[in-house]
Image 1 (cartoon, one colour):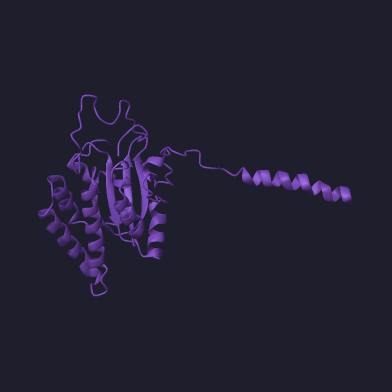
Image 2 (cartoon, rainbow over the protein chains, first blue to last red):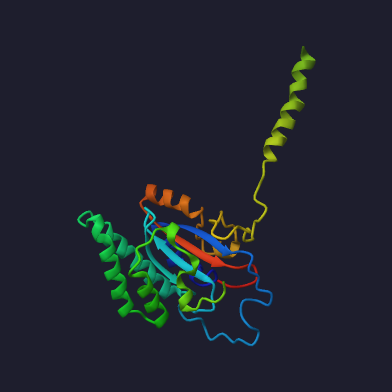
Amino acid sequence: MRTVTFSDAGIVKLLNDKFVCAWVNRRPDLKFKDGLYPKEWRPRGLCNGTAVTNVTAVFAAADGTILHAMPGYLDVAGFKRHLDFALKLQARLYDPAVKKEDRAGLYAKAHLSAAKEAKDENEAEAHGLLAPRLMRVADFKFGFFDGLGNVMR
Amino acid sequence: MAVTKIAWIPIALVSLALLSAAPQENHPCRCHPREEGASGSRIDWEGYRKGGLAWHYAVEEALKIATAEKKLVFWYHVAGDLDKEGC
């Protein structure tokens, strides 16, 4: 993420313009003695949501409502797609014409729809997990996506 | 009287030195060890700043800034000692 996605000029501009970025290390004690990947592993390029990674991207509205989250490595196109999803969902949920009590339903509908159009299985399952749960940042646990195989915990 | 006035100079210098010795972050390029679930502090990891991305504060602070600036929050979760490799 740092050497590819977070170094992309377009992503940097979008994040700096539209988002305030924060970070958290959930397991700083976890050491990768021999590196993150096995020596015999020959990368063929990481695909989005690669399960061996140890990162999760979370997008939240300013009131602390989580709009979207996606575990694993995301390439530039993938990360941009999820950024756009969060931005569009925020605009939809916080439209003055939308009642607060209707937000959870719209949120679920958006995620279920995205799950159907997802580019890969990991992404589809992540949307599926998120759909029934409109969470606040305080409620989000790093283990939320454990079922998807993020093993480096 | 003149001696008394001159005596203030070293006192002022010592005071300035003490002020400038305020605690500073001692992790210029490391993930700072924190308890499970604790929010991250400012990240000064040059790898993550390579593209000019501004990583600021703990998520609580980010939410306050986002409210004031009418922005969203991107909250990046990592796990492990990332000084070796990893995303």
